[in-house]
Image 1 (tube, rainbow, N blue to C red):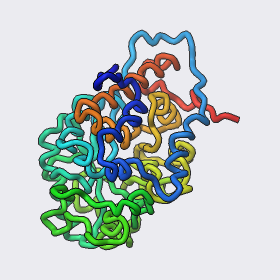
Image 2: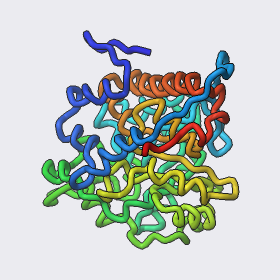
Image 3: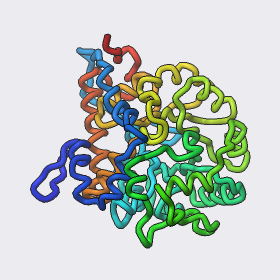
Image 4: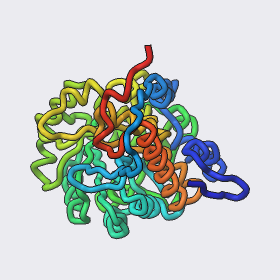
Length: 366
């Protein structure tokens, strides 16, 4: 469970986070780590897990354990999925190809971002597990529909519609840096439609200008139905923190919802995702799944989310830290660290299988 890098050994996700900046250009490091405005939600996502205690069981036979579960009917080796994050080639030359190979080694699913530096067809060609395609909806619905068609033809297994970003949240590190992609990198999946480059010569973040200019701010729940109608793939709605929004997403055809505040990168002072997870789990019906992201850094965090009712969790920044330090090997190791920590937490909580992780294990302090 350790990976040697120079004279250091990496045994935790935080080890990778501490050293990632040594391997990244300052602008890329700021882009990956930044949150919106004062970054309170960014900090709260991680800190909120400490408000929940694990009331473990004893005298349970845990000599044989399994972290295997399913998401959208696909078997995965653990309920830890790779979240959609943009621009992996800022972290390492292989970019999203390294990520999908790492996900395959971990036996889990990868969500590929619309804002990938690698074509979806190249990514799925190197996948050995499910690839889900994260979708931003452009004002140009023809370009959006063509992108969905490419994802289907490439073999993606679901569409993950991000709904919490009609405009980009103000990430002040990016504004100060006037964030742009380095020469030679682009939004590969949108090049054919002339939408592959960030606007140049802008006063702040090129990515913020891209969102304001090109993405559709008029999305409604009807667009969940529209996506379901133009593709055979299940639709996952990502970016929900209110129970009524989760219920409406399912009513309009979502097969899963992701409790997410975009990693604290959109609306600062939005709630920590672990704090709203139970209220959303309790209203989602009809066999739809609930996933969660935001602040997952330990296997015990994963177990708490599962106990409250999440089917799976997604990790974003930890994968980027792993890629930055050691490419595919680092990303795969991050996933193995979290899976092994989950396995240990299951043993210590008296849970031989994922189905044994139930809500009675978790209580909020106070």
